[in-house]
Picture 1 (cartoon, rainbow, N blue to C red):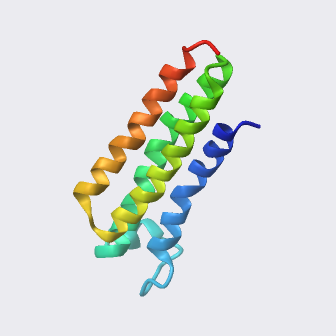
Picture 2 (cartoon, rainbow, N blue to C red):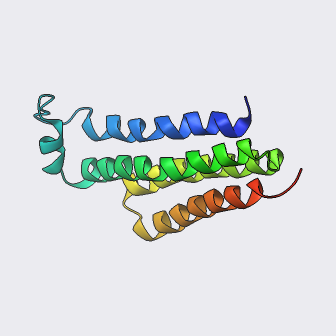
Length: 127
């Protein structure tokens, strides 16, 4: 299995990290109705929940890019590197979201999105 495919696995798990952070230790957490409880949260917990949602949104585009590059036998070394940078950007994104650093978070988001687009481009490059 390629490094990029392992990165798809990791990217699929990252939203759950943010999900756990949004809920653990929360006052009055209602596991029977967690979405309603999360909708009432503010600060750190609300940001962790938003990071979770964005993680799921970013995952599909990234996963498809990696799979297309794999199927088209693009430049695997480049795809692997871009996938690792994407993962680093997503980890930083979660940390910056939790810290409430919106402007820097948006720059890191753009870097991750740029990696995804670049993976699609790398898919078209011959080995």
